[in-house]
Length: 95
Image (cartoon, rainbow, N blue to C red; front, side):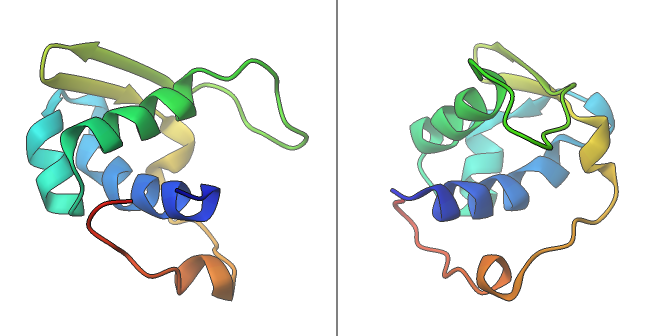
């Protein structure tokens, strides 16, 4: 699993957690095309940072309660600008 693949999966998943409403982790994983545990790992990696990378905007929170997930990520409510490489990353079902 590469950071590029994780980033691509997060870009596909985050819109399903819109308006900070709870969503089913299993349902969102199915929509994104990955296993539930893979998406859970991606969300954990997003929320559990031990340092702040240069230029990173904080304010991302992930609350997991059983199969229900709530994501607080106001910065992701608008479209993101992706490089050609990020946009063309192939989506696979088990990465």
